[in-house]
Amino acid sequence: MVRAVRIERTGGPEVIQWVDVTLPEPGPGEVRMRHTAVGLNYIDTYHRSGLYPLKLPSGLGTEAVGVVEALGAGVSGIAVGDRVGTFGPALGAYATARNVAAASLLPLPGDVDDSVAAALLLKGCTTEFLVERCARVESGQTVLVHAAAGGVGHLLVGWLKAIGATVIGTVGNADKAAQAKAAGADHVILHKEEDVAARVREITGGAGVPVIFDGIGQATWDISLASAAPRGLIVSYGNAGGAVTGLTLGVLAIKGSLFVTRPTLFHYYATPEERAAGTARLFDMLRKGAIVPEIGQTFALEDVAEAHRALEAGETRGATVLSV
Image (cartoon, rainbow, N blue to C red):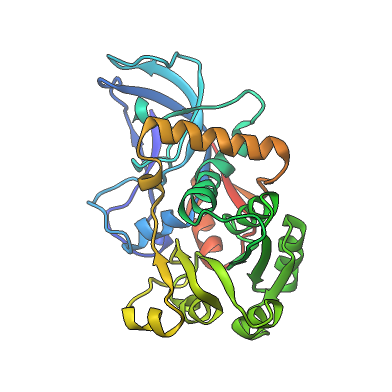
C-alpha cells in the first residue's frame, strides 16, 4: 500500500488530502520508484491553488528522489536498485512510491545524497538554464536577483558569482540579507526599507542592469522595469507575488527597448541530450562549491500542507525537503 496526496479541488493548503493507493505493476516504459526524499517547490503551490490549472482529481509535487523497485516492459538503461531523481513534468511526487516514466528519471551520482538531490534537482536545473541558456549571462555583467535568499535565488547568486558576474540581490529582512551575502551577493537591498530601483541605479552609476532574474512576478514587475539598463533583459520566471498581467509592449520601448521572457524549465530540458548536459553542469557546479544546496528546513512528507503554509508565508529559507 502506498500513501499519496490527492486534491479534489483547488484552493489553500487545506485541500491537500492523503489517500491509500494500491500501485499496479509498472506499465511499458515505466518504473516503480520508492521515494526517499521529496522536494518542495513554489510551482507546487501554483498547482494546488489553481494558478496553473490541473485536471482534477490530481496528485501534487514534481520533484522526488528514490530507488527503483520494479521495471516495466521496454525499459533499458535503468536497473532495480538504482538511485534516481526526477523533477517532472508528471505530478505525483507527494507519495511514498509511484509508477513514473523511465524517460523522466535522472541517475544520481554516488557523491550526492538523497536530501541534497531533492533540494537541488529542480531548483538547480532551473538555475542552470536561466543563467547559461536563457539569459546567457557573461562575466563582468551586473545582474539583479529578486528574492536572493530564496530556494532558486541563493543558487542564482552563487552560480552568477562563479561565472564572474556582479550580483545585486533583493531580500525582505536582515537575516535573509546575511544569507544572500553568504551566497556571494555583492550588494543586498532590503526591499521593504529601500527604493530598489533607486539603489540599483546608484550601484550601477545610473546605468541600470542588463539582466534581471525576477521570480516574484506582479509585485516586483514595476521595480524590474525601472531597474533595467537600455536593451536589458527581464527574465520573469515565477509568480510568488502574483502573475504579471496587463503587459503593454509600448512600456518596453519607453523603458529602453527592453526584452522580456517568461521561460519554462521543460522547454529547456526537452530532449535527453539537454537533460544530460544540464544535470552534468549542475553537479559540476555543486562539486566546485559554486552553489550550496542550503536545506533551510525539513518537514515530514505527511506534513506537506504545513510546509505549503510556511512557504507561502515567507517563513522558509533556502530549500525545503520533505522526508519520507
